[in-house]
Length: 296
Image (cartoon, rainbow, N blue to C red; front, side, top):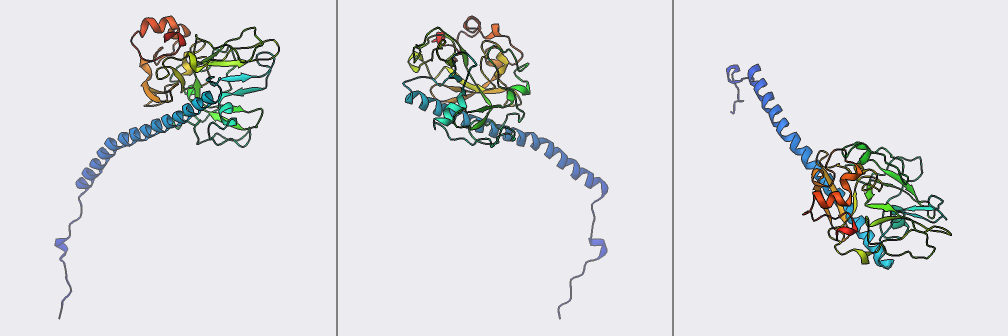
């Protein structure tokens, strides 16, 4: 006959309070060690996803150029007779309407932000920043300002598609008195342009024919708007790596992550003179990065 197993009370031993506290302390130490690691891994994942989105954008920009006789997609296309007369197409609308890129769209002007697609940055801020007008010196206040990580909302006059965009373009406006179309190829300034044309005013496009080193010429960046080299360099944003890194897209289509402090103007609150052509040549003579066509 099998007898049931029995244990004496003396064989049972509970954890003492001191032992419990030691275990809890060890767990707390492990959590303190592992949490930053998990946080860094998550941020690295966001940085990688952002770079992948920028790569898709750069591929679309190159497809636009190949389809349009080498013309580099403009930051803004104003089909009115003068600047601001409209209708106005921003570069995300130009790429989406031309079917150079697949992107989700916002259902209405009052809808919340997009949370996916190539124009979405996973490290971006969900707040909306107004579309930056020509000649404006604001926002944001610095390259770590969260305003520079916000989204701009642009609407196509043709398709009505509404797109939120978390990226900026290395571009500026330049107007000439010329009614011819297309405009002449530019060989100076940033590669992007704000283009307008009509009965009295034209502005020239830039063309890939003017680009000698596409793998070195910066075109799309983490940030907002354009004119960061002319009016407000803080439109280029340090939004990755605990606000210390910036993703840049180049005209050959590749994307790289840079320490923002090593870019022209650094990571603080630079002014336009810090990122002028003369300043870049003087302060970054050996940098492979190019921001102006004249650096080639």
